Length: 319
Image (cartoon, rainbow, N blue to C red):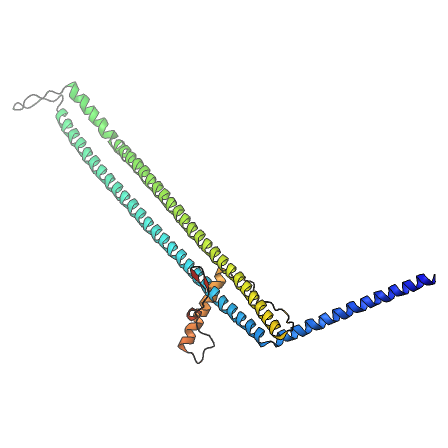
């Protein structure tokens, strides 16, 4: 029993010693880490590198913002120019359609006037012939003068006179029927013209909508491409910053034989600006730059971003 008790005490003492050693080691590591962090904060080389990287990020963000604003302006101008082109073409088409319809109506009115003139002339001829026939048949049953030749009125003459009376009686209805037939043809012709014009207008509208959709799709593709390029460039910059920090830390540790705490590179902010926000922001900066140039002493605005030169390169695109 005594032996077992001694073994248990020895085990407890060993565990306590191990725990004490662990705590001491943890405290030493914490102290070493704290000292490394203090060295890092006090290192002018690291702070200078961090400031350079922050300035590099700021200049990159300025160029990114300007590039997006210029792209939004260009896309907006493209869409406005296309919309104005479409609007002008539609207005010209409407004007042409109106002139064509007016010309057709004028021709139809002139044709009806010509028909009425012809019908009135025909009506006059019928009445004149009727008077002549009445005068010829008027002496039927009367004794002719001695010095006038005998007039012979046949049944045929009387039949033709009756036909002429019927023709005169139905003439107005017949003429009005001809006018109505012409009006029906004219109305159908005008209806067909308006239908063709409506179809032409619909095709033009669909064509314009398709062109605008193509432009919007192209603009969206360009925007996605630009965002992808900037995203890749940010990753490359972040990786380069990390490498520069690692190299400087190793150089400092090698020169001083002391540990330095690592530092994180500058973090890119989250972007939530829409195309409208970018346009408004760019317009505000442009106005601010304009006022600053007019009255530089009393203006709080800085220089226009368009005059800032940023020397990043990515392929054929300059950042």
